[in-house]
Every structure is written in structure tokens, then in C-alpha cells.
Image (tube, rainbow over all chains, first blue to last red; front, side, top):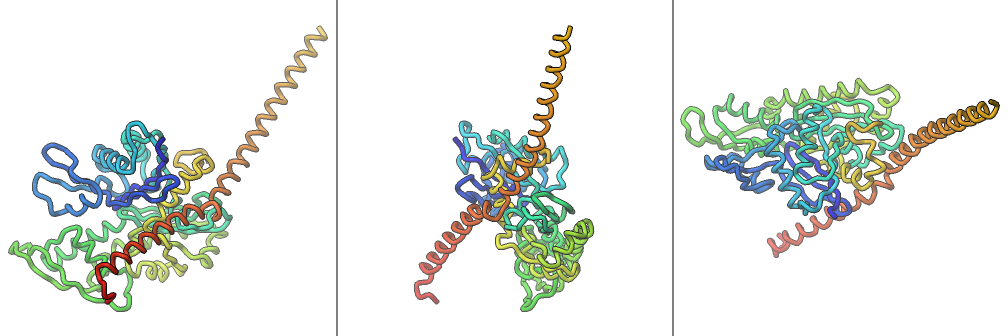
Length: 334
Length: 76
């Protein structure tokens, strides 16, 4: 008999929680395929290392964009391989809870559940990411008080107000940390005339990227391909430049938080001033982002203790208390 | 004739009682399931999952420290 699973099927990373065991898998949501035969060559971390460095016959792809499946068949194969790695086989079919962005359409929901069922799940149910994040971040959502969670993932940013185990207000934008990487890539191409890859842009973001000025800032030396000559070239980037490059993406995330705050009922709004908002997700680790949101909303922002694992922990808790919490699934009668 | 009326009234009363009972049970089911959901979301109920992951994180940190110490025997 297979142990039931909770899956955080993220644009950037996929995490799997096994009932009674904890987190058993944490890998990038990437799959490498042979372009000619369609054969899977690698998944997860191994495939991630291949991005931008593959010969012509290999393609390393992220089958999810903006939290939604862009390639159904490849996603199904990726989920199947990930489930196999945690012990799911043709004879052991577990119940699966999958975290998805709250803004996905009915068609996208069906695509995720179908992919999981075809990949070996006996039953697949979906839960909204902000709800799972709030459970995993250990917020007191069982109480009649306003809890606000901001989940910034690879492809989506979602802000939710949660009270008494339900979502009261929600705001989601299909913008995330991959858009920050893309903005950095575009800026370097436009202003410095060199091309850098997706992974280099991510490294720049992690090294000197920030949403607000921070103490002890340093510059970064970046190597890429000169667009004019085609030769390798090195440029020096400053944190101010990166802030300028990513300003549109950061503004869009902050604006969605402000919109969510304005949707919250007044009785719950006053709780945020005392309790603050909680930031989760890999995108939330961008330096200065908490300070920027705090400055623009005048509400304290706190970082979760487990920003990267909060969503899968929340879904894991749901799988541990499946019968009591099945009313929280998307599409369930509340 | 009277027996037919008595039987009809009895049937109506029984059906009415069953309907009321079912409705009451539905109300109670709603209360019970909401209570179960809120209880399952309490910090006490969530503690085992959080602790389990905390233990995993601590174990990973210990492994990392051991590796670091092996990589750098002088501790520099």
C-alpha cells in the first residue's frame, strides 16, 4: 500500500511530502529530453544543470509556466518519474494532494489532476497555494483573526487573507521570480549589448539583486556573449542597475499586495497592523522585498521560518488529516 | 374508513419525523465537519508535521557540518 503524497508542483521546484515521512523530494521542475526520440534523459537537479548547455539533440525544459502546465505530455512524464522516485509504482497508487496557484483556470486544473492520475495517483485533489502556505507557515488560521500570506513563486505571486480556515480575500498575478530573471537578461542585452543565460541571470539576482537599497551592497562581474562581435565579454553590474531592471516586476508584485489589502474586510485589516504579513516562496528571498512591501503598505512584513517548504508542509498537513480537511480542496463544497 | 385515515396520518407523521431528523442531522454534520476542520488546523494538530521537518532540517545541518569539518580538518 503506497503512502499518500502531497506535491508542491511549482514552476521552479517540485517538492513531495510523504504521509508519515516528511519531505522526501525537492528538485527543480525541469526535464531533459532527446529532441529526436522524445526519450527522457534526466529530470530534476540533473536536468536543471543542463539548461542552456545542451547539444542540439537535447532539450532541457520547464514544463510549467506561471504555475500552469504548458506541455501536458511532458508534465505527465515528469510527474510519473518523480512519483517513481518516491516509490509509487503501477501496483501502489497513493492519494495525492497537489498545490496549484489559485488563479488557474478550470481547464488548467483538469490538466493537473489528469496528469497526476495518469502518472499513477489513485485520486488527485488540488489545494490553493496560499492556503497551503498559511498552514505550512504555522499561521493561526483556525482562529477568527486576519492572517495575510504573500507567496512569491517562480511564475506567480499570490496574496491571501485567511481567517477561520478559509480564504477571505485573494489577489494573484502571473509574475514571479522567473520574470525577475528575464528582466535582468533583457536589461543586460539592451544596456550592455551582451547575452546571458537564464541561470546566469538567476545568479546575478541572488548575488546583487534587491527590491530596495540594502546595507553592504557590492558589484558583480558578469560574463556573456557580445551581441555585436559574438565574442565573450565581461561587464560590471551595480545593484542600482539591477533594481532599475527589475522595477516593473517588483512594482507589479507590490501592487497586487496593496490590492489584496484593500479587499480585506475592515475587521480583519486591523489585525494585520499587529500581526503583520508573512512572506513565503523563493521569490520572497529577494533582498529588500520585505522592506519594500512594508514601506509601501505600512504593514509589518515577516519572513516565514520555512519560506521554500511552507507550501508543501501545508499540503502535507492536509494529507495527514485528509478526512477532516478534504473540504479545503478546490471545487469542494464549503 | 377511520383506519385508513389513522394509517395515512401515521404515515405522514412518520415521514415528517424522518425528514426533520434528516435535516437536523445535516445541520449537525455541517457543524461537526467545520469543527473537525478547525481542530485539524489548530497549532497542536500541525505540530507533528512542523516538528518532523524541523528534525529533518537539523539532521541535514548536522550532515553539512560534518562534511565541512571533513573538508577543513584545521577548522579554519
